[in-house]
Length: 170
Image (cartoon, rainbow, N blue to C red; front, side):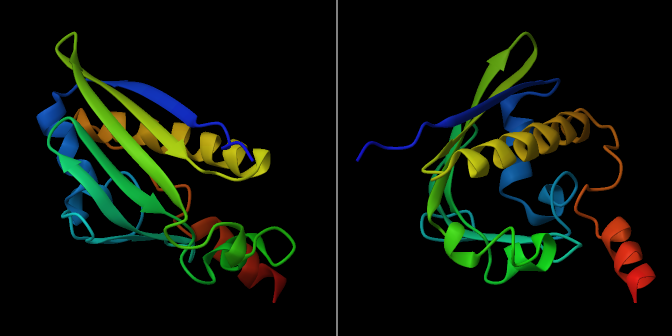
């Protein structure tokens, strides 16, 4: 059986690689562009866990840290996270178990800033690749704003819209 295609997303950031890299390793910086809580232990085998404001989350471990050029982490849904946001008909924990895929972040200096290329390996279905493509494009655009000193606005998974909808239904 052949490996699934690698999802690749790239963005230009108006900040040097050494200024962008900590947004993947420092919990306080990470939640400035993605997530509401982060448990990050940036050493090989250390925890890489994110929780979004709406209950969605990912869980994995750091695999490689080569600051400020490259890092890789394993990636999968935190237990129960898919159902918490998408409902039982759309996501199951076994669709993307914790640590079941790999995300590689590459940073290179470019025109006074950085070119960030993110590769997401082992996403098993077209649907998961497309969903992650949309999410990575959204979040990397937010990172570009934050790393350049701007405010990217509320996180798409902040929970404010979903919480309001859930309250309205009850």
